[in-house]
Length: 335
Image (tube, rainbow, N blue to C red):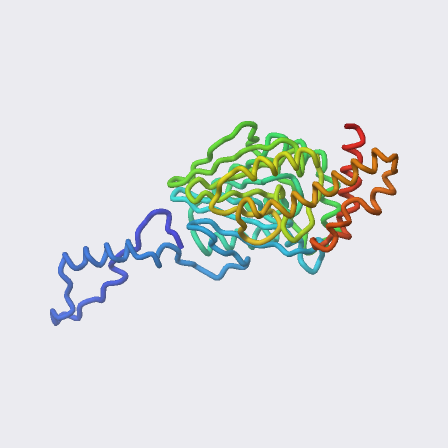
C-alpha cells in the first residue's frame, strides 16, 4: 500500500544481531539498505488486502474497472460501466463510480488495496445512473464531488425517477444505500485538479451524449477518460444531441493521446480508431433519418429501418436502437 509518503522503516528489514558480532550491520550498510528499499519499484504498491473489484493498472497510477456489456439487472448488480481512479503523490481521484453504493464500496476497496492516500476527488463524467450511484460509498472520505456545471441540475430533476428505475432493475438488496450525490463543484471552463505529482484536466463539453458530458485527461500519462462520449461494443445511447455528438467526435479525432478509456468498452483504446465505429453508427442514423424526413416518412416508419445497417456491429442493439432513432428524429425534423 502507498503509505501517505512515509518510506518503510529499514529496521523492519534488518535482522537483529544475536550478539556475536557476525550479524552486525554498519551504519553505511543500513543506509544502503534503506536506499535500496526506497527505490525498489515493487514497493510502490503494497496491498493491505485483496481488492473486491477487478481493476487493472493501464498506465502508471491509472486504474480501470471494466463493466459488462449488459443491461442493468439483479444478476450483474448494475456493473455495466467502466470506473477508474488515478493515484497521485497527494491523493486519489475517482472517475465514475459505477451503478450502486455496493459497487462503489467495492471500487473503494480496490483503491484501498492500492493506496491509503486520501480520496480527494470523485469526478462524474456525466449524469447517467450507471456512472454516479456508487458516489455514496465515498461520502465518508469527504472528497470534492466534481462534474460539469449542468450536472447538478440534471441529476436533481431526475433524482426520483433514477432511484425508482434503478432499484427496480437491480433489486432492493443490490441497490441498498444508493443515493444521488450532487456535485459540490461544477466545472464550466477547462480546469486542472492537482494530485501532487500529476494534474487532471477537466473539459466540459457541449451537448452530445448528454448536456453534461466532461472529458478528463491525466496529463502525466496523457490518458483521456471519455465517459460515454465513447462506446465500444455496447451500442451508443443518445440522451442529448446527435448533431452535437458527431461534432464532438470530430473534435476528439484530432487529439493525440497515449490511450483513451471509454465509458463502455475495453479498458483502453487508441485514437482515432476507437471513435470510428461510433461515428459510423451515429452518422448512419442521422443520414437515414434526414432522408426519411425529406421523403415525408413518419417516426414510426423511421424506427423500423433507420440505422439498421449497423445492427450486427453492436451488442444491445435491440434494447437501445429504436430509442436512438426516436431521439434523432425529434431533433432532426426541426433542422
